[in-house]
Length: 598
Ligand code: UGB
Image (cartoon, rainbow, N blue to C red; front, top):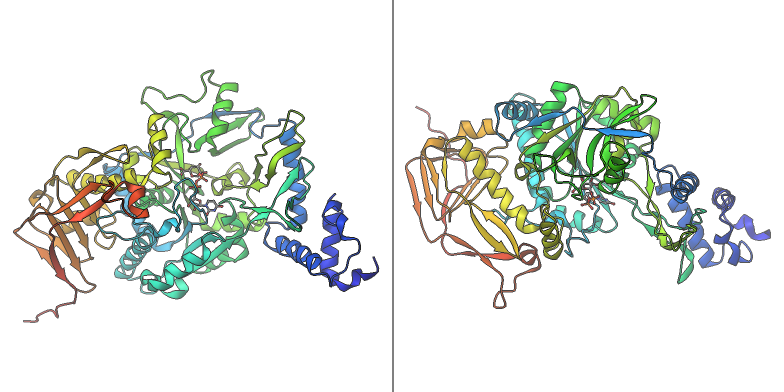
C-alpha cells in the first residue's frame, strides 16, 4: 500500500518475506500498512525480534515447521527404518578402581573444560515459585545448587592452579529464559557470584519461539490481541545455537579448552558423574559422551540407543521415553520397553549431562548454526489432523545434538551403575513423586534428592573403611527414603575418592546414625574422629584444621516431618521436613594462622 514506505525497508522486506510464507492472515486485518499505527508497529517489531532470536530466523522456522507438521499429520516417524540396539559405552561402579582412576583423570582434564548449566526451565512439575538453582542442594549444609556448582568448578580450578596452571579460569555459562533470567542475575549479584570473577560467568538467555495454529504452519495470533503472535519455549536445545551465536567455541578453542560439560539445574551429585565421564572422554577420545544411569523401563527419561538403518547408517542418540516403546515394539521386542533380569531396561537412561569435545563441537556448530533437529508435538482436534486443540511450536532438546553428527563421529556414554551416587534431581512435587514411586520409578523429589546426597557421601567414607552407621527408613511427604548420617562436605574438601583418601584416616572415623557431619574447606585433615551428634567443621581459605582424637557427643539435629504446628516454608514443603537444630559442635578456623618458622 501507499504508506508501506513508513516502515524501514529492512522491516518491510521481512514482513513481505513472512507474508509470502503463506502468512497473509497476520496482516489481513491491517487495512493499510501504516507504520504510524501503534498496534501495527507492535506486531511488525515483534516479527523483527522473533527473526533475530529464532535459530535460523523466522522464515526458516516457518519452513521447518511446515515440514515437521506435514510429517506429523502423515504419521511419518523419524525413527522409521531404524533398528535399536544397546550401544557400547563405559560402565562403572561407583568407587571401583576404574571409577576412581577415571574420576581423578577427569579432575585433571577439567582444567581444560568449560561448564554449561541449562537453567531456563520453570519447574512447573515441581510446583516451586522461585528459580530451581536457588534451592538448597541439601539442608544440612544449606548451600544452593548454584553455589554448589560454582564451588565445584572453583575447586577444580584451584587444583589446576596448584599444579602450576597459574592463569586457569574455568568458564561457566548459564542458559536462562524469560522465566528465570532476572532472578538468576539477582541471585548472582546478591552473592558476589559465589566467588567467581565477574567475567567468568556468561548468561545466555533463550527466547520463546512463535506458536503455530494449524498443520499449515500458520503463525498463531493471540486470541485477545490480534497484533501479537503467541510464543512458547523452544526447549533446552537452544543452548547450542546461543553458544554458537556468542562465538564461545572459538573463544574456548583459543583459550586452549578441550572439553565442554553440560548439566541440569538440580542435581547435587552431578560431579560424581561428570568427572569420571570426562576421564572416559579423554581415554576413549569421545566427541560426545552422554552420562547415563540404569533406567527403569517406561521411566520418563530418555534412553541412549544405537540406531541402525537398513542402508547401514548408524547413530548413537537419545530416544525419548515416549518413542522408545513404539520403536522397540515395531522392531526387536514385542513387549516394548521392559526391564531385563537386572530389574532395569537394557537401555541406559539419559540424564542430560554431556561431555563434548570442543574442536568437533566448534566445527559442528559452524556448519549447523547450532540448530539441533527439532520436533513438533501437536494435540489434534480430530482425526483429520488439521486443527489443533491449542497452538503448538517447534521444540528441541540439547541431547539431540549428536543426531546431526557425521556417522563416523565417536559417540559414547558413561553409565554409573549406582543411580543414587550420580543422579538425583529435584524435579517433581510430592504428589507427582508419590505417583512415580507407585509406578516403581525414582521419585526425583526434594525428599529423595536430600537422602541421596547423604547416601553418596556416606558410601564414599564407608568404601574407604570408615565406620558410618547404616541408614534408617523414614517417611516424608508420603515418600519413603533411607536416611543415613547426614554427612556432606564442600567441593573444596574433596571432589574425588583420591582427595578423600589423602585427607582422612578412614579407619579412625566413626559416625552414628543420628549424626550430622559437615566439612567445609580445603585444608581439613581428619586423623581420628568420633561423631555422635552434630559437628560442623569450617576452615577458611589459607587456614588448616586437623582433627585428632576428637570425640563429639551432643543433642545434634533432628529431621522432623512437617505437620499442622509446623507447616514449613515452601522450600521445606518440597522436602517434607524441617531440621531442628538442638546442639552443634563447631570446629572453626576461619583465618589463616601464620606458619611458625623454626
Ligand atoms: N531447560 C531449559 O534450560 N530451557 C528449557 O526451555 C527447558 C528446560 P526438565 P525434561 O534428566 O530426567 C530431560 O524440564 O526436558 C532446562 C531430558 O529430555 O527438567 O523434561 C531445565 O532448567 C530427558 O531425556 O527435563 O527432560 C533443566 O535444567 C531426561 O534426561 C533441564 O533443561 C530428563 O531430562 C531439563 O529440563 C531427566
